[in-house]
Length: 408
Image (tube, rainbow, N blue to C red; front, side):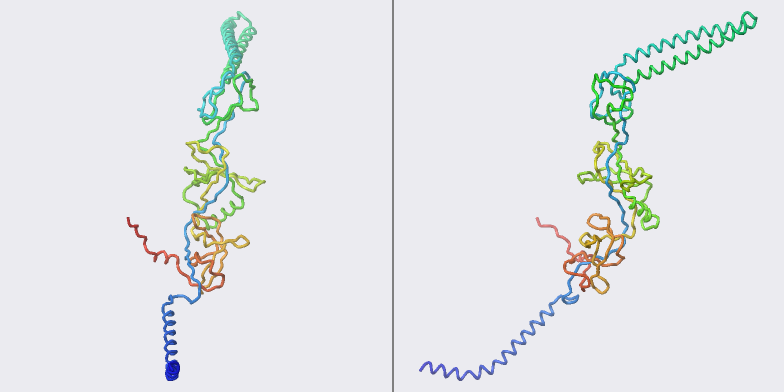
């Protein structure tokens, strides 16, 4: 009975449910349309829907110093190889290897005994020649008076005058021999012709040395200041001269060219140098030109033979563009390339010339014009010809909130 009653009630309500069903469907459709409309109203304004957003930087010409980083090696400012001028036995070495020596400081002493004896003999010979000259002079004076009264013949007087002149020549010869003996005696003390640092000694006390021998006793090098010899390709040098002559580059101010030194460990040398001169000929084997710079070296940090890199400011480019490293890529051919947003908001590849880096930016000298919009962020989302929405990097920086101090 109860089941029959329930079936009867459902049969009576079915027409009513069917009448309300269209109304419910209409209400659900209206709510769905309103939701879609709200989403469209909340969509971000600006830009074409679906176009990738990229960050661009508008480039402008800047004055940029053009520098060249060239490999080179340090060279002593002065070098003196010590060789004996006389033969003999080394009696004493009078310096410490690796120490600094003064100009004129005695470094070796060769046994002077034989040279002292030769000097004494030459001095005695000079004294004898002086005595003979005095005798010849007095005789010549006396005969000159006697020939006037015809007490001696003219021939005898002439011989007396000639003997005086011969005695004078003997005195000159004796003086020269004495000077030679004095020089040889002085050469027994081997001194340094320059101030600098002396290296290892090739001989010790008791060694026999000969005059003007091939092997040096030691080498003295002046290291303050010190030279740095670097090489530059002749092709690069010619290109630099053409750019300077055409006005593309301008010479740096001043008559001297400043040079910065980068050491083997990558650190920058504390003192700045200057370019001294450049070779007048090109090396046939390497096709390069040698440039010489001079650096102060008061602490002796630079030693001869060190490998270094010298940075030379060769001119100023007043129309260069600075582009971040992240914006520059390389083509399979190795050419530098950037992506530019053109006037139609489409991506356009540009081949540029970027051979120098300053900090985190490339110096672009060709391929860009003032006002070009270079993509610096979002490169992975675009390809050439795609339409994009460009946001200015400068505007983003201006709109960024100022950092606040952290609460203590």
